[in-house]
Each structure stands twice: as C-alpha cells, then as structure tokens.
Image (cartoon, rainbow, N blue to C red; front, side, top):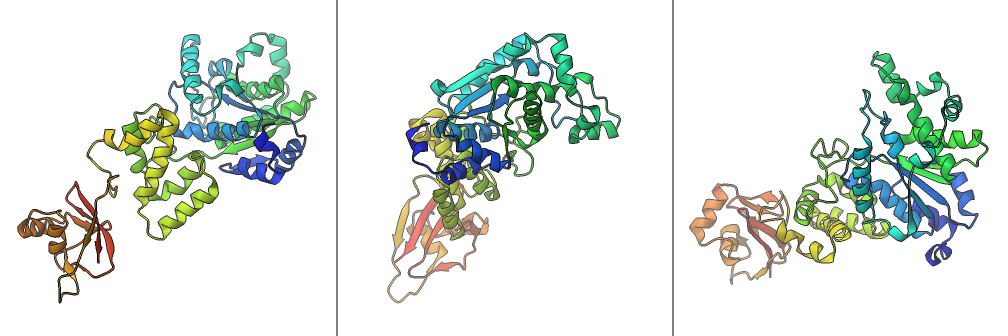
Amino acid sequence: MTQSADKLSIEEQLAIIKRGTFEIYSEEDLIAKLKLGRPLKIKAGFDPTAPDLHLGHTVLINKLKHFQDLGHEIYFLIGDYTAKIGDPSGKNATRPPLTDEQVLANAKTYAEQVFKILDKDKTKVVFNSEWFNKMSAGDMIQLASQLTVSRMLERDDFAKRYASQTPIAIHEFLYPLVQGYDSIALEADVEMGGTDQTFNLLMGRTLQGRYGHEAQVCITVPILEGLDGVNKMSKSLGNYVGIEDAPGTMYQKLLSMPDELIHRYFEFLSFKPMDEVNALMAEMENGRNPQEIKRILAEELIERFHGAEAAANAHKSAGNVLADGELPVDLPEVTLELPEGQDALFITQILNQADLAKNNAAAKDMLKRNTVKVDGEEVNAGFSLTSGQTVVIQAGKKGFARVTIA
C-alpha cells in the first residue's frame, strides 16, 4: 500500500471510495477486504466500441484513480473478445459486433486517453481474449450452464425486449457470463462499472462463488448527464465534452452547462476534496456567480487533459463569444464616486463613467434595446446604485465591468 493509504483509517479510505459511487455490493464485504491490509485487485472492463472518450466515461476512470492512489492494483480490462459479441446492456436491439481491426484500433486509442488520468506504470492493461481464445467449446458450455434463461430475463433490457417480442439472440445471453468469467480469470477483489452494468457485475460475484473463488465487491457509479442536463452524456446526442476536445472547446462547453449540474460535475469529475467542493457550492448559494465556479472546474479538467499552460490560456482560444451569463476572465474593476449632493448614480451615468458607453445617447440606446444587465438581470433607464453597492454590469455582448459605488 502507498504511504498515503497507510496513514488513513479504514473509515477515511471508505469515504474516498464512496465519493461519487451509486451502490456498493456490499459495503460490509468491502470493509473486510480493506482490513486485509494488502493491495486489492480492482477490475474495470471496457469494450472498445468507440475510439474517443468523453467526461461521462471518466466518472468510472476517476474512481479507479482513487483506488490507485490508495495503493491498490488497477486492472484495466479491454474487452476485445466481448466487443465481438456486443454488450446488450441498455439496448433495445441486437448490437452488431466489431471486427478485429476495429477492436484493436479503438483499444489503442482508449489506452492512450485513459493514461491521462491513471498512472501508466501502476496500471495493468489486460485483454480478455488472453483466456477466452484458449477456452474450449466444452468450457463455454460449462460456463453457460451456470445460469438459467429465466434468470437472464430478470434483466430489465432483456425483459423489455422479450415483452415487446423484439428478438434476443442467444449470443447476447453469453455476454454477462463472459464478463463475469473475467473476474474469475483475474481473481478480482472489486469490480466497478456504471449502473447499467449492475447485472453483469453481480454475475461476476455469483460466478466467482460457484467456481470456488472469494466473491468480489461490486461498485457502481452513476451515469453522468450531458450538457443538456437531461440525457446521459453521449457523442451521438451532441451533449458531451470529449477529453480530446481542444482546450477552448472544452472551456466553452463546460461553461455552457446548466447551473443545476455544477455540484454533480464537481463530485464526479473533480479531484478537489469534497470539503473544498462544498465550500464552493456554499459561495454560489451566497451569491457568487455560477460561471466563476464553472470556470474553476473547466480549468482543472483542461489542465488534467492538456496541461497547465493550456488551462491558463483556454479562455483565449475559446474565442470572443461568451456563453449566456459567462464573465470575462479579466473583468475590469471600476470604482465610482457619488457627486456631491447626489445619493445615487443612474445607469446612464454609470455606463458613461465606467467606459461602457461612448456617451449618454449610446447608453440610452443600449437600454432601449435591453442589452444592459446588472448581475445578469436586464435593467431600464430608471435603475440606480447607491453608496456601498458592488455589481457586475454587462453592456452589449462584450462590455463588462465590476462596478463599486464608493
């Protein structure tokens, strides 16, 4: 175990592991394994069905990183054999298998991207074809005998397809068994996957027991919502942030997310301690602009995937168009004084004195066109500020200033 893990109690390790998880089967078994005081074999399987990863995929990979930092052995399983079957999880129709060439090309790209998060020297990349290519037909039949058709039909996606008389191919029933057998081959202590993989993960736990192995702990992580805040992150839906996206593109996309997603994205994607995350959420609840909080996350993720320099300059490569509600990185600070005998400054005066309008006529024109906002809200010519107030004013698309009335 690493020195950092040695210094942590079981409770402290468990708190790190539980962050961003959905369910643990079972927590009692996990605690027992942690008490063994040895590196655990942590397995996560990935079918290389698509060459590019997005932030939704990294929810699971981040959790592997947490285990890795605690000193455990990470087995990054490339399901090259199972990819040629096609995982039916969550599908309403049979998925076409991939060719050997597609699998190998995607697997190579997958690994290159994964090591932007995981420590390459401490990660064991394995292919399940290593054991399945050696398995005889008799061995496969023996494996298939471990489960009944009625048990398979308990799976939600199979049940729906059966009820709607949508065809289910026999080979699709093999997928959970084959994935489960991976855990036997690796002697996994813990297997992780998305909530859509729960049935398959528990299959590994069941098969281990039937083959005389100690049952693995199964940990599921949530499916991350995409930038639309409704559907799961998916390249096909266009609501994704790819980890290979250019820094400016990643910056723009993350600042466009709905405010309601900020906490979930921090919990699942950030490596900041939860105390720090909760403090940021409290600041936002107390009036801090959500765009500033999004920017913190965007810069952290861009640095992770592209480096510190790219993170520092991402706002520049994002272009001049700002997402709705976004603030410039270098927001001008302006302090204005009330004229003698005047207890407030009207917005036309403020726009002029803060150099947000060329003259009174230009200021009035912007107000008529409803292009002046104070703290994100449109204002009219009757708006004024009094001594001690500080606000952010936007005039048009590119005019911004944080204005304080002395």
